[in-house]
Image (cartoon, rainbow, N blue to C red; front, side, top):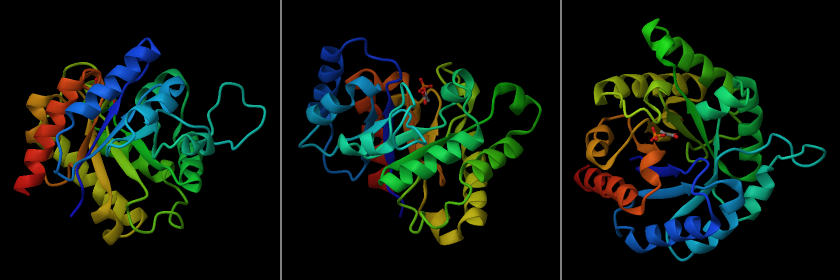
Length: 260
Ligand code: PEP
């Protein structure tokens, strides 16, 4: 059985530390208990330490939105995986489509960052997904396969159980657009991803790897998406910025976990 894992990607929000702390505290207070659903938030780098402190004593974990492939040195503006880990974080989102689009991330840089995150004991949440043009050109599967094969290259020594790594399938056309993939569209790609993961690792590991869906997930579409066989969680942008909407998604996940 795979756990359901819901993570919130706050992106460049909220604008102030006070608001970030408040969001974390609201979430901690409103978090539904007793489901076994795993929950994490990924605030901006500047807010990682205070958010770790704000959620302490709860089951909420914290992750960075990116991390460097380098451990130290002359890399201005970077955040190493050891730094992220030493703040008390558990996860690092890697290769988000906004990083690929605006910061020149490639499958190769995703691979280097994933290797570094694993070496530091962080669980990388590696994002893959096709653009609208790629979907319309019917190359979704080819694009996602290449992202997985190149992004996860050489990881067989570090991924032994499947718990070390999370994959997020985020069709770029569904991120922040309100256009959610249908449960059938998402399931089709998730099943394909699991098949590729089985060929990269092995089928036992692929069966245990959590594959999140991301792209306009909300409280009212989460249950149907999470009920799909190969959808094990959600990476949530906009709807993670308000405690009540994020808690609505966690509540939907609880319902799926309980009925499984
Ligand atoms: C994301 O940023 O990863 C995301 C899925 O955003 P949204 O939920 O707003 O589409």
